Length: 301
Image (cartoon, rainbow, N blue to C red; front, side, top):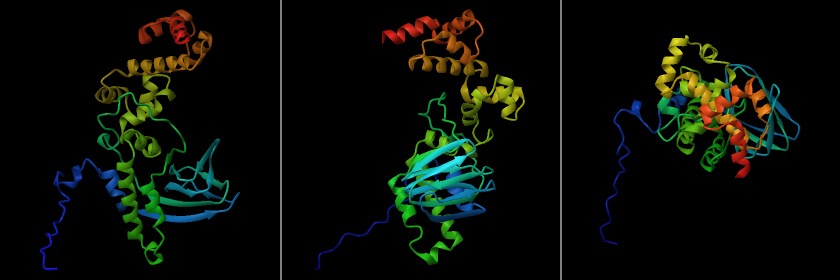
C-alpha cells in the first residue's frame, strides 16, 4: 500500500501541431466552422412503410442519416434508394421527397451554412489531377460506425437536445469525423452540390466539362471570362483546356471499347464524329491506335 505510484502525465495535444489553428492540415476551416452556422439542428424521425416527408426548396442544406430501414429519395426524375447505415446530402434550393420502404429510423441534420472548400481542403497530393467526381443529384455514403455511435447518442439526454449550442457542438464533431474518416474524393463527391467554381475550381471542371460543347461554353458555366478561365485552368491542371477535354473524351471512348462496344459507328454517333477519318485521327492522336486496332486489342485480351 505504501509503494509509490507513477505520476499521471498530461498528454500534449499540441505535439507536432502548428500553433495557429487557422492553418490546421487535419481540420481545415470548412470542417471546423460548422459550429458557426446561422442555423444548425439535428432531428430524429420514425417513418412507417409508405409514410414520407417533403423537404422544401429552401435555404437549408440537409444531411439524412438512415439509422435503420430504407428510404426512397425522389428528386425530379431521380429516384435514389438509401438503406440502413447510409446517408445522403440534399442540396439547398431543391425539393426532395423521402418515402419509407419499411419502418425507417432517420436523423436529419439541417444547416444554413455556406461551406467553402479551398484546394487543400478537398484534395491531397495522392489524388490524381484527372480524377472525375461522380455527378449525382443525391450523393450517398456508407455510415462509418463511429458516426453511427455519435448519432445514436444525440437524443439520450432530453435537456440537452433542446440546446442550440449542443447541436452546433455535435455538428462540428460530426464534420471533424467526416474529414478524417473519408477520403478527399469522397468529400468532393458528397458535398458536390455545395461547391461552386470559386470554392474548388478542379471539382467544378471535373463535374461539368462534359456538359459543355467547348472551352467557351465551359468558361460561361463557371461564370468567368475565357481568358480568366484558361489561366485558372492552366494553374490547376498544368495543361490547356482543349487538350485536357479531348483527353477526357478519349478516355471515355477507350472505356466504352473496354466495356464491349465494338461498333465504330455507334462510337462516332455517341461522341460527335461525322467521318471515320476524323475519328481515326483522333484515336491515333490521343490513344495511339486506330479504333479498329483498339477494338481488336480488347477482343484479343
